[in-house]
Length: 55
Image (cartoon, rainbow, N blue to C red):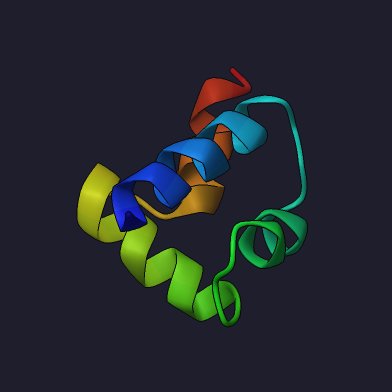
């Protein structure tokens, strides 16, 4: 279940959505909760991920 939400959130980040918007849209309590879960799966924070794909 959490992996599905993280993967959906990652897709939204790919489209340029804001971190806070993505965290709330996909049911995370707040941005820090989203950061912890995302980092556990992808090894980087959502901000780092979004920054890296924008290059």
